[in-house]
Amino acid sequence: MAQRAVVDSVAVAKNLVVHFKKSADTAELRAIQKELAPSVTSLMLLQDVQTRWNSTLTLVTRLALLRNAVTFASRGGSINMPTLNQWRLLEGVKRLLEPFETITKDISLRSSCASLHIPAATLLNKKLQKQADDGVGSMKDAL
Image (cartoon, rainbow, N blue to C red; front, side):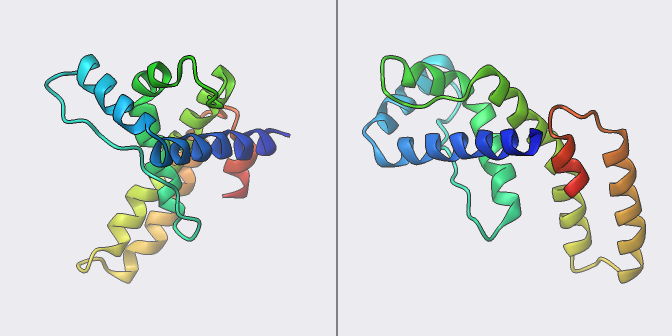
């Protein structure tokens, strides 16, 4: 059941990004970002690419960063926003995938040795065991 909730939460996040990419609300999102943080360059939401696992992490990370601006931009509209529980699950997905990205980058370096792969996998396994469930326990087990 928790796995289904995670899949549904990520789907809502993906649909939200698609909405802002394909609608006139993009300009409003940028304006709200400037209003909330005038000294910060406005950022775009990033889409998920099915063939790249780390793009889900990128999508969730950027959406979490722009959560307030997206919430303000969606008020009064017919946008399907994540519920509070879905936001919590998306944060859990983010925390769960971050160690995978770190290790992937480390072992993908040109200077990386094959002898680092087993210790990296062991370290990743230990990080996963220490990590709280956050509602993404079945996803953690699957990974």
